[in-house]
Length: 467
Image 1 (cartoon, helix red, strand yellow):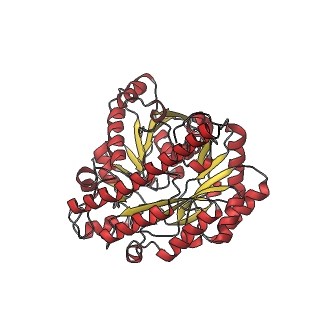
Image 2 (cartoon, rainbow, N blue to C red):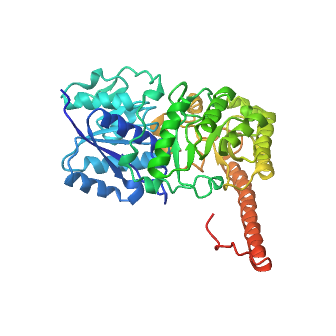
Image 3 (cartoon, rainbow, N blue to C red):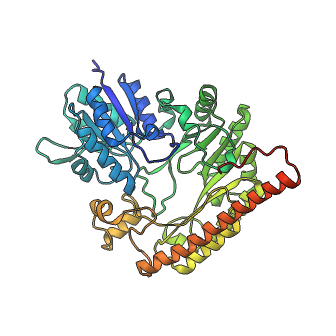
């Protein structure tokens, strides 16, 4: 018989004014609730509580288990460690579970560093529920696949890996009713969405590509069905007046066939909404983009990374500069706004590569977002991290988080032939050009507004607003 547990799922504060809806944690909330447990959400992200507030909250409210997770990054490492300290400082000291991309590449380090009781490795919906049932019944954790923990003697134990959920349509949709949706719906992800209330929603899980800087743990791509997506879209439109959907998974445009099926399904549904997604430029043809626009697409975020063919080969990008240029031009010609993401400093790149990147952005940027160029980071779990370890540039995950990765805009590892000072000077000059260009465009837009207002007596003017 199930022993019902009271679960607290904590969403950490990343210091954003309007927060991004925590899709992964919301799926876990549904899984726990479906299994019969009581679930409460602690929204540090919305209310910006100091970490010590969580200690007081746990002192005044009983929970059997606390769950916390994050993606990889210097800020996330420090934040999760601090929150774990706050949780462990509570008088009632609940069972503490961590998960997500931050902890999955090296569970032992985080078990010892954060003093947590268990770590769910990779995909968590089934693993967490089995962990809760095992814990509730006082059983040993050794039989829960996808779990890591320290036994009573302090010995590290990593159980057998858990297979991925093969049919992602079987996963219950996020427990939206447990979250302050009116807060999350206000997030503006792109200028192309207008003032529509928006929510991120995954169209699938995984990606068929293997870029060397990507720290995705799950292999392969598992798409959701169009029918399943539309059920969730209808629910969000009816319940929360959502009118723009950001397909937030790694790659909606996983193939021409897949993208066409979704677009045709959206059109046949009769629902009126706009959407954005992550795309691949080798599939960005005028025909497919035209269908996407007709189906409501207003923004496609592209991982370009570099406009140098040698660098693209080194990073396993499976793209050429010719494909990049052709796809971006087709996107702009179609009237869809392209997100142009570039990182610098991968294996084989030099200052000439960076100059080409800047020239490319100046030529094709539509000013829907401020774009800067960041140095590539070899996150644990990525092929680039393994390369850095092999070359003696990073010792291990502990070295990465404690010594090397101090900020996403600073070097973690220098893979180029430049000195660090030369690298930073090149990046400073490049981003100065990009920032000046963005500001100049913004100034010109506002001057045009003034022209229309005072010289053409524009009665539709409603004040200068933050963009």
